[in-house]
Image (cartoon, rainbow, N blue to C red; front, side):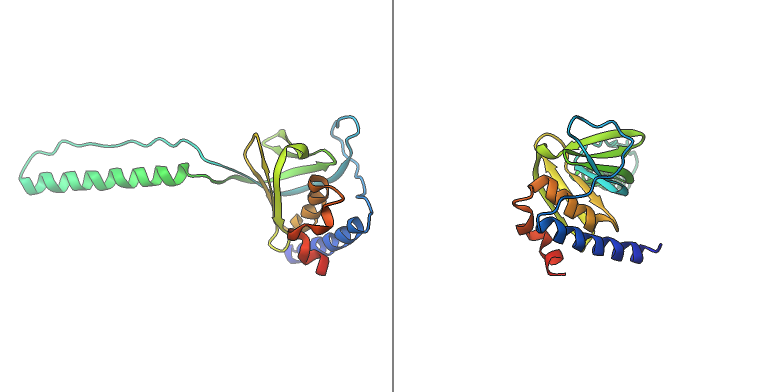
Length: 189
């Protein structure tokens, strides 16, 4: 299946799921081999783009040289050294700035209580009850969750429109779900 066909299928499925949930329906559970908690049910098991948003500490080496010779040679050496140090400092500042990191494709399982992502063989749990902000743009293929106690999570890719609808339902609840602005375009489709 091409990416365009996968995207169209996801969009169509997202519109269907939105209408179904907005009309009072409930999502359909899926089989999942993971051990889940009591009253926890899986509703999605898929591969999707994964990223986390955070800053990091980046160290850089500042060089200094000893220049001996004519005043022009010493001045040129000091200037080159200063330029090299400024470039290293600017690269370190850019690398340490808050940004989306850890870009990869992750197996992702969504339950009624959490979103679980398998990263480098380890399952990470993102509990829906800890989300302080959830937003997305189904047409652009992404959704993001911000938490009170950990770095934000972004999920992207062709299946993101459908996943955004499902996560919106679980994070915001059935009552608020139909009025969410980021789902407006799906409501009009």
